[in-house]
Image 1: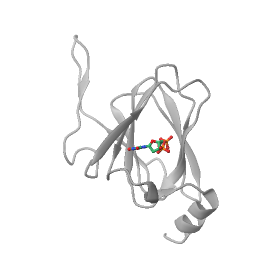
Image 2: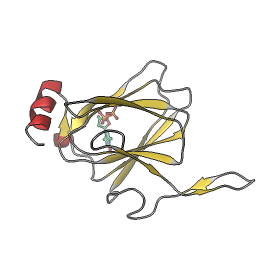
Image 3: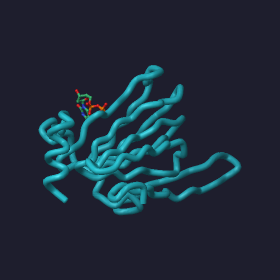
Image 4: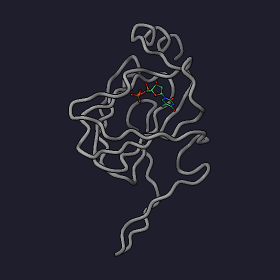
Length: 137
Ligand code: TYD
């Protein structure tokens, strides 16, 4: 358990002299129905992604290549998780403020999401986030 609500999951690993293979199937080990995938790449040195929360969306972050840090804030406590293994996923539920930074050169961040893109699901103001997060224990 990374924080009270976020968790790391391990994907199966098929290790082979030709290279390693990992996979995700419906319902396992990512504990939600994956409706969307997107990825972040070509991040210039020092840039930051995220900086918001979602009202309902759950996501899973995977460092497919390279490394980056995910800062999590549930309104009560803050944790930073460094991701640098392509067989680990960081599952982050709704109402957690997230900020991605410290991207290595050539980092690729895959994000699996529980719903299609919806701009209205974003909480982009930190004060609004604290009010919503603390009002929903
Ligand atoms: P945003 O979620 O703000 O990026 P970050 O990962 O840094 O939080 O998205 C950046 C832009 O991309 C914004 O204009 C919305 C658009 N976008 C989509 O159209 N579809 C998507 O699935 C996502 C994640 C973003």
